[in-house]
Length: 176
Image (cartoon, rainbow, N blue to C red; front, side, top):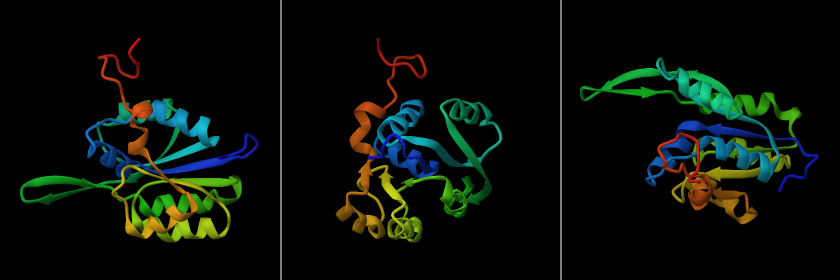
């Protein structure tokens, strides 16, 4: 765990996290997730890498209100079988910002189960700058499995009880 004096940053692949959680049939409470990062790992800054889509401005404002620093990736609308798929791969931005901020944090948390981050995670580990890898589910890249041996992997699906959105009809509030 991070010590109180430690300055830890989180770098979050929003699509990997969101789709991974949704694939398990629940919704992440973003406010609770930001608080979890702050309380459990002393995360001072949480960078959220997200595709920018017109019409999602209220979502972006909400995420910023929760305490995330949003890094936007332009998206592409791709037609496949008469369906429009919006793609916004944030991998390069996440790696770039992790390295730009390298001197500003003691330890980094990478939030993604994507094997594309293997080289970044390996580098952070070798430099003693890796705190944890938070993966959305037990189905994450086999390239990251070796980090299990060092107790880096934390499965977010196992934290569902404390991080899931409660369905009370009032957004962001738990049941009284």
